[in-house]
Amino acid sequence: MAKKKQYFEGAKKTEQGLEYNGFVLSPVIDKCDGCERAVWFEDERFCTSYPNPERKWAHGACNFATHVKASVDKGGQVKVNPIKASKRAARGK
Image 1 (tube, rainbow, N blue to C red):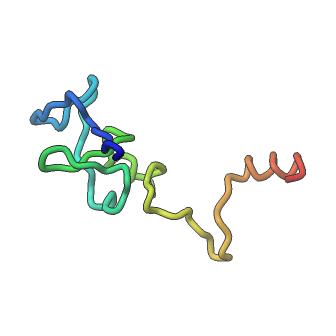
Image 2: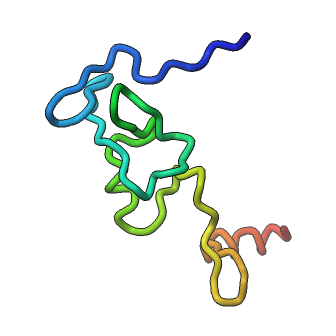
């Protein structure tokens, strides 16, 4: 039987949040509901990838979110960085 991975081993709760490996982690926000990276520690959920989830959602979707699909424009196409697209076109892909 596989052992479940234990996150935040050796972490301790403080007034600022969860202190782990020299970082202070903030609890996840409601937009993180459904994300696989949000795990429980005692009575709150914390992100295993980023210490302050609220900042990751400040300018749109969090790039670590496992429950969010890529954004789609009005034509139904996935938005692509134009610089990356021009490099791909130059390579012939």
